[in-house]
Image 1 (cartoon, rainbow over the protein chains, first blue to last red):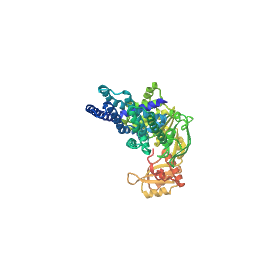
Image 2: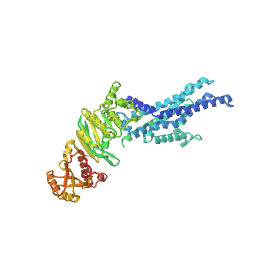
Image 3: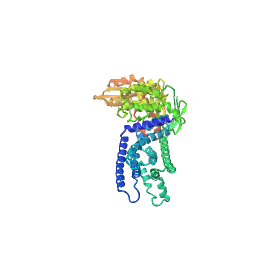
Image 4: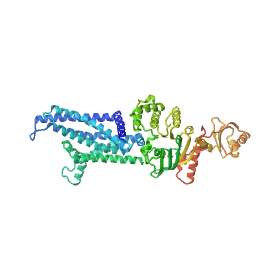
Length: 254
Length: 339
């Protein structure tokens, strides 16, 4: 019954757009990303004018790379806001009991809720892609489109992975703020792992670095599609969904 | 339609439901009665497929709730104790979501919504946000949610809680009308409600069934004992003397009435024939009897007595019933203004 996934997703999306969180997140995201983008453009223009002593300065490339870096940083703060209420609110309002007693399977509930969050994030990314038009319109040499798409694929995969972890953490509590804080801490720690092993890629440092989504995001951002990094993101997503599934199962046993 | 056998549920080490067995026939309205913490909500949650039992089985329409959860859930409408609503949605959107998940075909959804809105008195608030509705309306939205797909089995956990008297009456009427072609289990601790709507009553305490019968038969049980209320004028000590001397009067109590020199007496007679003699004794003792009437036995009396007996039994067995025994109301002392 794939239809039920859609029904759950539809209900979730309606709930977002009737509550302020969606608008706060959308506005913050567009504002932050747009503002940083304009700063990047100015920097690129100045540097292009000044020229670099070493190699010819690639303005569009500089803007795109940093644009993605900005997005991945902003997501660190915004994704916890998106996932915090997904299960915590249902538990608090007692509507989990409704979902569990409707003819819905746990899988349908989980996928429906995930897709709703995911679609919302795609909307954010569409918004963040709009300023890139300037590069195609005004840059002396317009950038290649494929690497940009690959970069966005990386961002989308990162988002899917973080969302699924956030959903899991949201099932653990009835308090949205706690869920948001847990997700934020987990993601910032994972981001931070990327700083390890910069010096020497050995042992624990290498493992920690492997765990960090940023280390896998890098290759996407420069426009190379590497299957091993794709597998990392898909594994994290599956892991988060699996944990969510298990906690939903266990909720019924309490 | 509903078969529950040897159902039990443990929360940690605490047994919420112990070895519960009962059946509900198609088209029957069963009232589930018990003090708070007796296991009503737990039993209903298990029936609705919200949580699995620790032991025993539940079958609805011949299918086991645990083995065929989705099939069974399609045939059930369930109103939980905490009404599950999305305050950010409008009534129509909320019921629309339920209708979709309940697999009501798109073409019939509008009609189903119209019907349920009329039936539950929601016509005027269809476009309103649930969060803006009063408690009474929210309760009705909850009930509408449980009925929209016209299920074979309806499970209502305290459907009239939080409603005003007029609304309570409407909901009772609604439930009674549903009983014609649905099987209904409802829990409540409002006793008159049960005698008005239910064909059969199940009284549970400490997770066990302590009585199961029609409301009439249950009230018939304790009518052998006769409880009378009387208003007497005179000296209190004299009154106590006369009552102490009377035969077949195992329990009595005197409380002061509003007017000075007047006393309320609650008299429990083991023999109805005693009444004329008791009246004569009072008059001979120089006491003026202003009122003397037999108290109608209500389901409440039966309920309290059964619960009390059960608790006494447990206390005698040195079991952990102090919690309830401590505040178990005394039949004679406490509910003088029963219906």
